[in-house]
Image 1 (cartoon, one colour):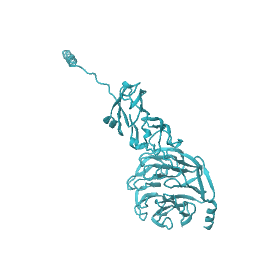
Image 2: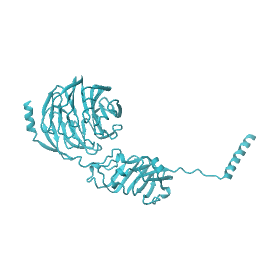
Image 3: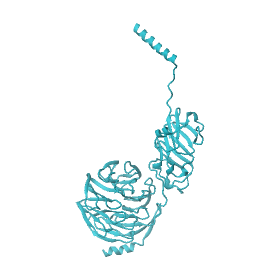
Image 4: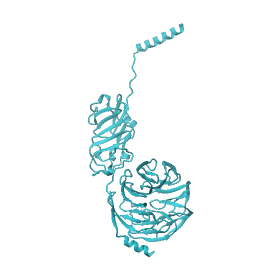
Length: 485
């Protein structure tokens, strides 16, 4: 064991940089079968697992490490926000082992089995552990006692929100992800079928990223209810994210990827067989395990200093916020869905904007909840609505935010029809430049809140009283002639 400590002191001075985002890494531990890692919310307390050896604990943000609790089958570890409460999993017929003193002493708990992964709430009270070839187990007393939930399965990674309400578990037997919104009492399959390995989520549970060993990453921005594939297809091992979910890091057998926009886009940050990953709540400290090779820590990151917008529900053609040079002055910013498009020809300030929550581009309507958005968005914008009958339409405007076309129409007023094509709306201070062709209605909104289109059904021709009587008489004569025949 002394030899290991000497080696630690030797390699700590090695510092190098990985490309793309200029993350500086310090090698803090040398070769070993490193596997899992966890850290407190501030990154000060960290615990490392080795595959079949010892737990290592650090209380100085990973700069130095002390071996704790020998075992032949250590696998993974999780801890509370302050690092006081920790639980580690043992594989190959092992136990769950828990600590209530920041990893200094450990006590076996739970049944024997192939324990794979564990997740812990912010205060440490609520915990979830996966038994590979068994059940999902939950604890509500800091890991002292455990209750089985869900059915027997090949369970893998698991994650939970800070309050424990939202939990997501993986299985590698080509099934869907399993999601719970009732603190682990019940679980329902969500997402696509795959060989799922690991999952991470933001502290509130809204943003989640799951990885698999047979395809791309999959991200959710609605507490795990719906999932969208992102990034390259690969054999992924591990994923971690910041408290907000904005900064994420995922490793596979070849490459380490990082995202600064809630998992929407990913950049290659270096080669290696990346196994375990952990991140402080603000992403200022990141620990990464290069399997059998090194443990690396990155300090003083400023990745989350700029809050990029949340736009996970928008599609190709939307501005890639992480790629802009100045988030406070973005020209021609664009939001796109499969129903329409908004583009601001001027500049907007998009820092920290939640477009998912406060901008709706739906079936024949757009609506912005301006009290919750930066005022720069309440300016001239080019709007497109798709699937419009250009020969018969009514465009409604509402000065308040409504989340559906029907509610905008019910509370708004007509601002344009097909008669306005080629000109402005009836009130040019609201919208101008009305055009419609190829089922696309286009106009320039001078400001927001909501616009909605309603197809105008062609009117039924009106008939006078004498015309109706004449028609009835002709029908009667026809009936009489038929009877005579």
